[in-house]
Length: 171
Image (cartoon, rainbow, N blue to C red; front, top):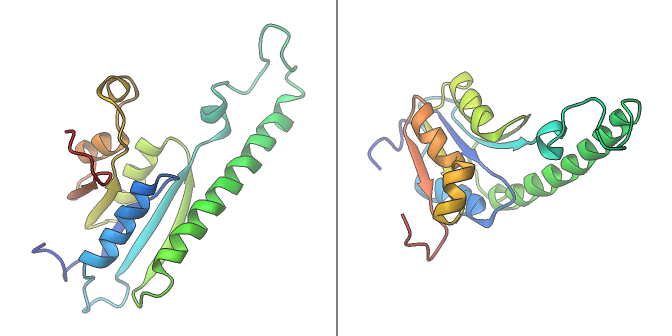
């Protein structure tokens, strides 16, 4: 890759999928950070869903005899704790990948919708490159869910490298 060696900030988005860890490995194996900038780094980014996104409920009373508004904060807190455990596991897994590598790697966790938060973080860090894995959703599912990698490709200012799952020849 021609721009390799002039990169000062490469964001690698990771989630619980194996392909996101492949994306991290690919970035570390194939990209060279700028040696002229001491602040050059890979930023391993994970977006933790906010409880309301995860639960599909807005804070407030849940209809049809669900918990009253008073019980919702406890419910939200339980979801937050659950997501924090998932996030810790994902970041621990990522750390194993970059543990033995002598480059500057930072980690960052933000909470919200992955599509928007990845783009926001890439912009705020003035990243030179985003590396992201593409999950192997079927065409129909992708049409309804919208792909995070596809959204980011169209909304960030920098180049994007999308790593596909091994053995995936679908477009």
